[in-house]
Length: 226
Image (cartoon, rainbow, N blue to C red; front, side, top):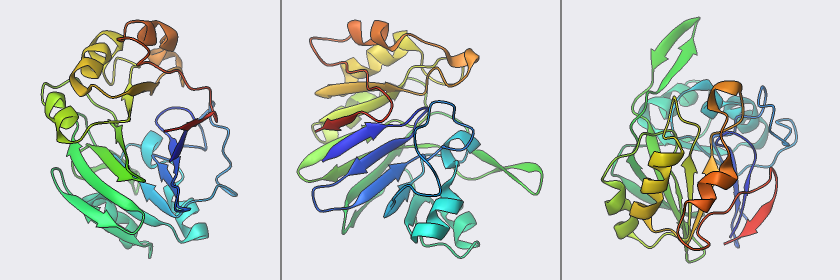
């Protein structure tokens, strides 16, 4: 499995079996992104919650690539109404797909999207545990710290965890450091920071707070083999 970070919370996963998976593909309007929504590959798009900086370019990419959209039921139904392929899930549920297993976990955060000019709640925010190629990835989505992260770490040993550090809307560095100690992932990558002034943080300072060599700051587009 190969993973890369593309600004904000956008993560790309390339499985050994040849699937390209995008998580929270916020590209247009993301000053840190190196991706092009008109050319990026996607077999699957996973959405953690409905905020615009996470849904991002999902609709355009899915129309072009015929990607399967995996999200909570409310987001899935929204995209199904646009004639796109979807698979709806909810917190605590898991499903085995051809490309790997997804388990949807708790996240403490909102989940709304502007529809016809009005903010509309689309279900609950989530985190994602993705298992493929004998490896397990945890993408926390946008969330506060919560003690049940200890159970996420105990559910299945985590090879890599993507944790928000931007503060204000999500965990900051202090809480994300505690989250990393709960999760006990082999590698922890900070996300959701420095996209705009209110969430500016020092990712190197975060990683220096983590145990051993657990922390890893990824440059945008840098590929990490898990």
